Image (tube, rainbow, N blue to C red; front, top):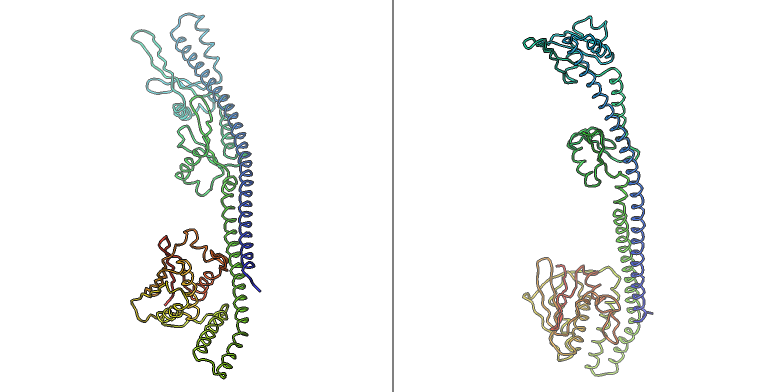
Length: 511
C-alpha cells in the first residue's frame, strides 16, 4: 500500500540522489580539467625549454658563423691592400730612376705569388697578367673569359703612370681572390649551409621558417606541410601567425646581415592545449546523456508508481462498489424513498466514473472526437452542487460546438482537480472563468481564478509529485493533471499568468 509520506520520501530520496550525482559529476569535471591543465602546462614548459635550448645553440653557432665571416672579410681586405701595394709598386717601377727603388718595387711585384691579376689599357686590352695557369693563358679567350668574371667580383684599381705632364698612361688592374682564400670561402659556404640545415631540421621538432633581414624573403623552412609550403603566400601568412605566438630569433651572420628564425608551438603541444576543451565537451555530452537516461528512468519509475496506485485504487473500489449496487437493489425491494435511492444511485455512478478513471491509468489512451464545450459544461454542472455557493464558474466560448480529440472522463478529471484547487486558493469565495479559444490546429483552455496567486519560482514545482501547500494534501492532484494532459492527450499545461489578482492555467489540446 502507498501512503502520502511514502511517496514524499520516495521523491525526496530521488532528488537527493540527483543532487549528489550532479555534485559528483561537477567534481570529476573540475578535477579532470585541473589535472589536464597542469599536465599541459608541464609539457608546454618542457617544449619551450627544448626550443630555447635549440635557439641558444643556433645563436652560438651563428656567432661562430659571424666570426668566421668577419675573419674572411679581413682576409679579403688584406688581399686588396696587397693588390693596391702591388699596383703602386708597378706604377713606381716604370717611373723611378733609382736602382734601389727599382729593386724594392720589383721585390714587391715578384712577391705576389697567390693573387691572380690582370692589367688592361684604356681600350680594355689585356697588357699584363700574373698567377694564372701558364698552359691556359696560351689561349687568349681564357684570359678574356677570366677578365669578364673578375669584373663581376671586385672593383678595379686605377693605374695612372705619369712619364710627364703630357704623357700619362691610364690602366686598370683587376684581381680575384687567391686560391687559398677561395677554398676557405667554400668552407664558409658549407658552414653556412650546415647552419641553415640545422635551423630547418631542428631537435625541437617545431615548425620553423628562416628569413633574411627583411623578414619577407624566405631562405628555408622545416616541419611544415610539404604541399602548402610551396606557396609563398602560405609561408608569409604562417610567419604572421608565428609572430603572434613567439618573438623571432635574430641570427647575426655578419655586421651587416641579421636573419630571423620564426617558429611556432609543435602540433602535439597545440593538441594538448585544446584537449581540455575537447575533454570538457565529451564529459558534458556524457553528463547530458546520463541525465537524460536518469530522467527517463525516473519517469518510468514514476509511471510505475502511478500505474500501481491507480490499479490498486480501482481494485479496492471495485468490491465496495459492487456491494453498494446490490444494496440499492435490495432497498428498492423494501420500498425505500425514491429520492434517497436516486441520490444513492448518483453517488454510485460517480464512484463508477472514478473507478473507470483509475483503471485507465497505465492503459493505452483512446482519444476520440468529442464536443469539448459539452464535456466542460457537464463537469461544471457536476461541481456546482459540490463546491461553495459563493464561487461562480463562468464558461466563455465563441463556439457552441467545438470538436477535439480527447477522453471525456480523463479530461473531466483534469478540470475537477484544477477547479477544486482554485476554490481552495480563493478560500471558498470568488469567480472562476473558463475561456475556450479555437486556434486552428489547437484548442486553448484558460482557467482563471481570483485567488492569491502562485509565486513565480513555483510555477513548475507545483506539478511535481508530493508538492502541496495543504495540511492534509497528498500533492498528487496537479501532477496527475500534467500526466493526463501531456502523456495521454499529447497536450500541454502550464501556468500562463499568476499575480495577486489570481492565477490562469492554460491547457493546449490537439484538434
